[in-house]
Length: 63
Image (cartoon, rainbow, N blue to C red; front, side, top):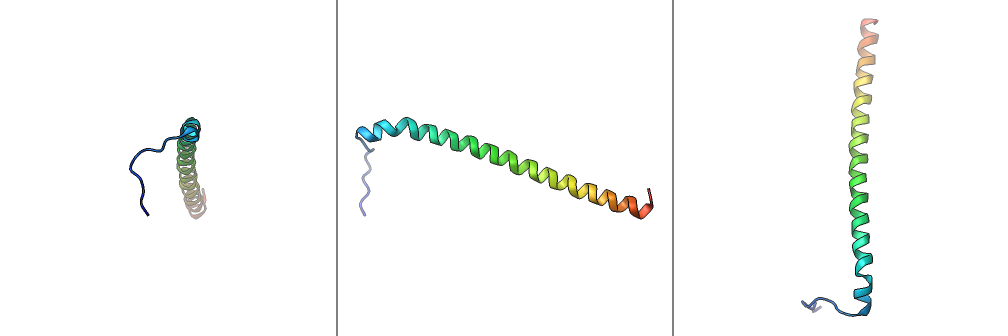
């Protein structure tokens, strides 16, 4: 398959260019929020583990 090296030209390619840019921007924002979500969930998991360990220690020493 021979892929041309020249950039695509044409009416519809020019028309859809802003929409492609908007879609890429939205994808970057969504990726950023996914990263925040992962960080928050990992933090919640760590807090859950620490609370569980604290609960076990408290029961062991009857606090």
